[in-house]
Length: 282
Image (cartoon, rainbow, N blue to C red):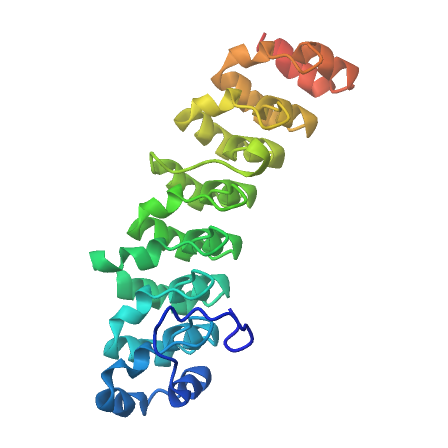
């Protein structure tokens, strides 16, 4: 996202950015760009060798006034991507400019043509919702879900869904909204999913909500054959174990890789509380 350091030419045949516009965007000096744009309407569309337009540049530096002024002159800047496949919105969220990101989102709202600017994923597959959750901007995440629920379906190159990240961080309100989206993704790294993460964290409230809305996940194991139940036992999360067995008692008969049942494995580990839960739901 650096404004000037990369050498890759990502202009795609677009005109190079005027030095005056580059300087204005970098320092947030917006009051003279209207004069330049009046003389040459396309001047705001020029890009750096990295594919950044003036809105990308000003967003990197967090200049809200410049961004809004530039958009008043040329709204199409919102949907342009640079060599990292980033829109200005994605940059704003990833760099933690939450206030600016909210304003850019508002500029897209109610304009179907600009939905791509909201849904855009960067070269690693992260969209604005991923970044908002990762950076702890929970209200922005909720606003993004409300405006464009399709963001919840996107999965990164690291196989992370927004829900997986939200549950991993114990963001209950964001996770609840994502669970309300019927087709939202719940996958995570190494074949794990949102229920694995709730079990590992010991978050019984989220585990209950996930079980109620996506009961299938209770039996879906990760790449190592570990189910949410086994995850709860491994991390001694008794509260989550109780939730899982209360919702689906048949899970109590689940066996581990060694073929031994849950009760035996818990006993050999000295996990008395786990064994008691098993007996209760047996």
